[in-house]
Image 1 (spheres, rainbow, N blue to C red):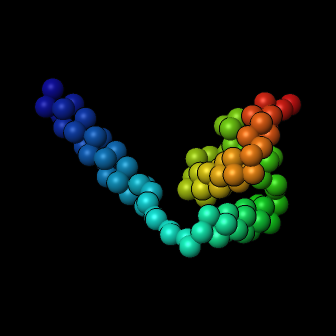
Image 2 (cartoon, rainbow, N blue to C red):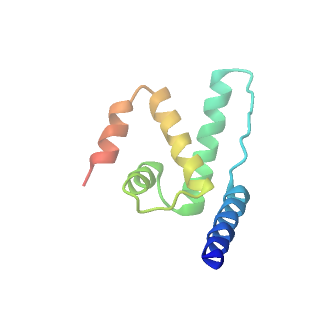
Length: 101
């Protein structure tokens, strides 16, 4: 019984240590205007699209279908895409993107 309890405590400790190690750091960036912020988001989207050879709309569809992992790069990409879609006033496009196929 003591041995089993010890194993459970070790497993719990290992999980907590792993969780602490993969916690994403929160960053706050301030821009001088909303337009500057949108330009920066558009630049990040362009870089990701080139690196991954996939447009943001296709990425977002695959991400929402669970076909891509929830790593930090993909979480940021999804958030940046949401920002541009809502900022452009085409949130219907976002709904359509998630439902296509």
